[in-house]
View 1 (cartoon, rainbow, N blue to C red):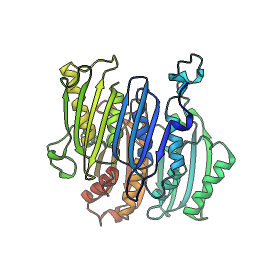
View 2: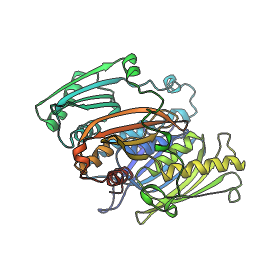
View 3: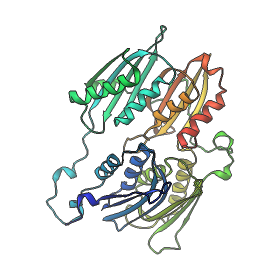
View 4: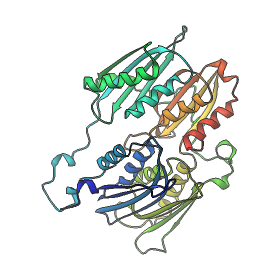
Length: 412
């Protein structure tokens, strides 16, 4: 009849300070399950030091060794991981399991959060931090500063807890914001319809001021910030070691979100992982072995398919995001491009990390917005931050780019 609901995800606390917490997931398998779990761990800012997973195509067993933060809410982490796992009924042989499990998930309700307050350094990050702590996901944002030093923020958000339609949840959100911003602010939350969210969508085409070359997905001779290609991923495929699986071996520098980027790429290629193991050596280099098959259950024997998958993995792991600081006449604009999954979800916490980096540099944001655009035939979330001119003069533009990149990668 399956396993108990409480046993789907087990957390084992570290035996001594500094050791990782062990997360065990034991549930029915589905395509992209590892991707969904790694996305949750990335949202909670975990560092994954080791991973083992195996599946027979019906049942999946995953063990992750993770390091969290002192503020990590482990009960909430478990709740989110359990919610991502398929119901045990789907693998129990019972034919009458709930019909709603067969239905595609309902799109979450979208709410418009309007904020008006006095501008100050780090304000946007402080607001974003509150929203993240409350599990409110930012879908779109439009931030602008008036000549008299006031800020008008428009956040299109969804609620992971699905409670923002209630007065209690809205008042709780406002109170958390009031603690951070003080009493001198105006806040309003309202549910918006599809017509409003559609109007808020950016054009799928890049603005004329931004070209594809700004966010090229090709890897140059020098990696980001001048890093040599010797630090880029090493990816090899082997069809001889296993009679039924293709072995993919990856060696690369570790960074926050590495496992998520790997899993989302394989999910987008409809690749199933039968067995895998990954470890991080000395908190720097990561070694991963994956035994994979195609959707038809067969190994990848076509050399062109192997080459295409290797090339895509190399690009995704070498440059999972694109960061650029460009001139807009006398102004400075920071641009960050985040490729989205085929399912339509973008990488979590990008806005949080970018605003944190700018706060650390003591740079003020004059305006900010998030839009989805097509870059080299791929949909991306593009984050645009217009920085206040006086502040930027004190920080070289390559330093801004480097700080943002390091924060996104977790190399702080």
